Image (cartoon, helix red, strand yellow):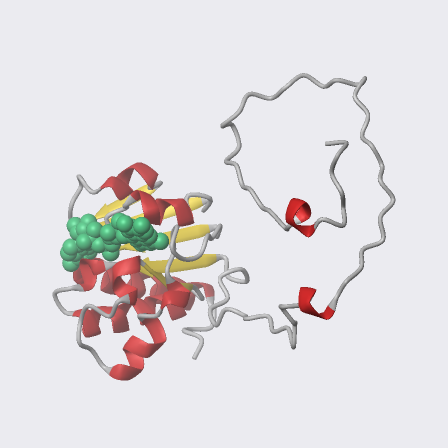
Length: 209
Ligand SMILES: Cc1cc2nc3c(=O)[nH]c(=O)nc-3n(C[C@H](O)[C@H](O)[C@H](O)COP(=O)(O)OP(=O)(O)OC[C@H]3O[C@@H](n4cnc5c(N)ncnc54)[C@H](O)[C@@H]3O)c2cc1C
């Protein structure tokens, strides 16, 4: 190290390395070691500045999950009547003031539906999981989602998880506080109805348009 010359750019070329935590055992702290401080004023030549920052723009997500206490996510379980089911999910989400998330395959627009609905909901911005967003709402509804590890990684911090799925063997059951064994088409209308009745009884304003 003593022979290193800061002017020799080959020796000091920017280098980066990333290591996953836990790969190497932590070494004991050695307080006898001292770093060597080298005073150095770099000479920057025009040819060194190959990259020029001409502007900076922060890309904001269109979908704001952070400000919602409840998220309703749907997956390929909508497949039998996709358009009808998305409208049902949309209605349910409005009723409980939730944001809508999706599983990754839905972002690939696997079903042909009304363009307006697909461009609103079948978009990468709504994907929950390793390829999308990590969320931590108070309540997370997984509707027609099997519960693949990549999806779980995005929602496992949710306080309370409610799933709707006809398959009691679906892995999402292990992440659920409440598992409703049933189809979207059957369960959501019942829930919407009950919520409406509850709001009426408690005099809470109905669905926010
Ligand atoms: C590198 C990599 C990264 C990935 N990243 C992500 C990611 O970030 N997010 C993500 O979600 N996935 C991700 N995936 C994909 C993931 O592995 C799964 O394929 C995906 O999550 C499955 O989506 P799904 O649950 O919608 O569909 P499926 O696995 O097909 O599940 C559909 C579920 O719907 C149920 N169902 C069927 N009919 C009904 C009905 N009428 N009503 C209610 N339920 C019904 C079924 O029983 C089933 O459990 C990734 C995969 C890879 C390889």
